[in-house]
Length: 348
Image (cartoon, rainbow, N blue to C red; front, side, top):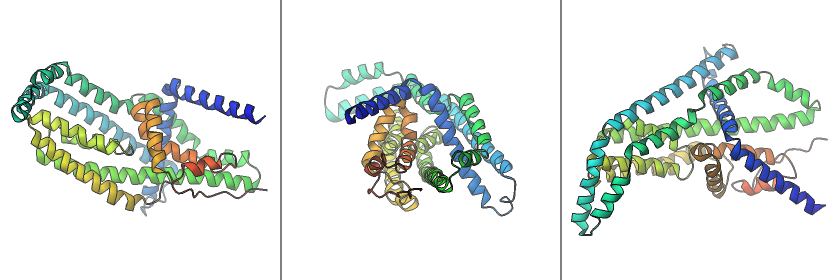
């Protein structure tokens, strides 16, 4: 019986993974809608702290928060598009600078790298590289209509959902337990989104001025890229630093601007990531660093860049839900940072 149970669980896991991979065109827009819904709730909480606004009806706060979020998303897409077009116009300069860089390497190191690097440069299609970067960023907003449709229904469902939960669990103790679990998910994800956004904005803001002073083309685009990639744990900040550094080298045809970007923007990433972020976020997320890296890889393989962005919120929700049930509680403890999870009272 125990063996058949293990086989049953294994088949369920395999089925879930297959569904997540092959139904991602349906699942990803829904998860993005949930993420945007959490963002709207965070904006509502911030607005409700203003004295003259907190008395407004909830639907007005929801409408204002939705408009603010959608305006930011529209601005982001238009800004990315405009900056990509600007960079694309300067591609001939970048391609000429590749030859200049290879000559510099050959002269300084006296190594016959010219032929090899020239062949590599010929194979490089910078327009294709830029279009892939653009596609990766706009892919988050690619299914805009579907995401918006899901988001509208989530917002319509929000005021009715508590009544449904209460009807589903007429027993008061059980209802309180389920309601506590929902509040924990709401609090954990909301705090993560708010604090991570604040930290990423600070990083992007400081990086923008550094790139502007160095003279990098389209500094606003690179600052926004740094802001977005900072939501990817561990490797996001590294990628966000390397991208503008490489393009600085291509733009100027020498290594000094790239090294400056790498050093200064990298220093900003280290200071904010290791000093500011731990103090601001504290123990907001009860996740093991090893689990963060593993889930980042797992969701990245299944869903690409979007999977990396969603890896932490999804893991937080899984830990909270698994901690509520005795059968899955050991997995929640294993995934947690220090093995400390709040065990709910057993309703009787």
